[in-house]
Length: 472
Image 1 (cartoon, one colour):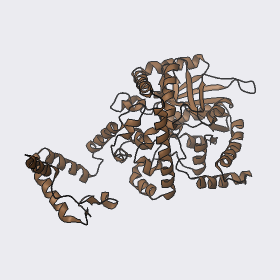
Image 2: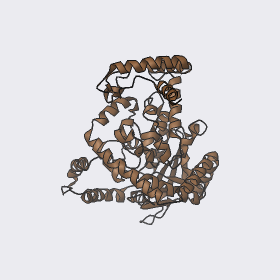
Image 3: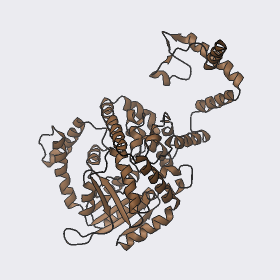
Image 4: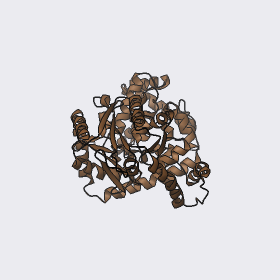
C-alpha cells in the first residue's frame, strides 16, 4: 500500500469535500458509538473485566519472550510450524515461499490488518498468485483497488450505489446481470462468487485476534464465517500475527473477547469465534499444513520505549468512531493502514515520523479515544510524545516552532504576558465587526472555516480583578 500520510492535509481537504464520504461517515459513526454504549451498559461488570484485561496484556508484555517461546513449542507439539519475521519484507517473503511450497495458484484470504501492514496482496500478485479477499468489506475494497477505511468495517466509506456499480463492473463478465436493488441481493451475489474461491483455494491466510501460549492456539472472530472457510478447506493454512497478540491462557483470551466484541461492534459476542490448534483433516482425507508467521515490525522496540502501552491495543477500532477528526474525514485521509487516533500513534512509529508528521497533530486532544478504549491506552499522551519529537527534530514549520518559543518565553513572564494579552484583546475588539473578528494575523487557515466571536475588550484576568473589586 502506497504511503500517503505525508499528504495528509491534501487528503483531508479532499475528504471534507467528498459528499458521498460525508454521508457514509455521518450514517456510520453514530450507530457504532450507540451500539457500544448499550453493550457496555448491559454488562455491569464491564469495568472489572476491563481492568483484568489490562492486567493480562501488561503481564503478557512483561513476559513477552517467554510466552512467545512457549506458544511456538506448543504449535510445534500440535504439528504446526512457526516462522519469525522482523520486517514486512521478511514476512512477505516467508508467505510467498510457503505458498510456492504448497504449489498454490489460488489463495483465500480472511480479514487481516497485519496482512495490510506488510503489503501482502501486492507481493502475492507479483508472484502470479490469485489472492482473493473473502471478508465482504475487504472484497468490496479489493474490487475498488482501495485500502480499508476502518480496521473493523473496511468499506464503511462506500455507499450502496458505489458497491452496486463495482459489482456490475466486475461481475458482469462472469455472467451476473441480476437485480442488485437490496442488500440481501448484493450479499448473495458476493456469496456465489466467493463460494468457488473457497472451494478451489490451495492456501488459506487468516490473521489472529489472539494467540494462546498455553495451548499453541490462534483465534479469530468474524461475523461472516469467511475466516473458517479460508482456514478449513485449503491444504495449507497460514496465520499472520504480530508478536503482541500472545496471551497466557484460554481464560485470559475469553476475558478479552468480552471486551473486543462490545468495543468493536457493540455485540455481546461475534457470530463466529474460531480456535485453530494445528493441522486438521481435510474433506479429501489428507492432512492440512499449519503455519504461523510471527511479525515484529518495530514492536520489540516499542516494548522498551514510551510507546509501550500502544502494544495493549486489541484492534477494536472504537477510538476511531469516538474521534471527531476521524468521524469527519474517514480512514483514507490518514494515508496508511491504521487510521484514527491509534493510527496516528502507530504510523509514525512504523513508517517514520518525517513521513507522517501531520498525523500526531490530527487530534483535538478531547480525550474521547482514551475514555472509550477498552485497554485504557493514553492515546493523547502518546500523540503528545510524537509532537515533542517533531518539535525536537525540527519537522514542524519554523513559524510554529518560533511561535511556541515566543509564547513559552512570555508565559514565564506574567507581567509582560498580561500587558501584551491586554493589548491583543483591545486590538481584536477594534478589528471586530457585527460581533465577529473577521481576520487575525497568522490564523488564516484556521479562520477559513471559523470566525472568532468579538471579545469584550478585556482579558479574563482583567475581568476577574474587576469582579473581585466589585464584590469587595
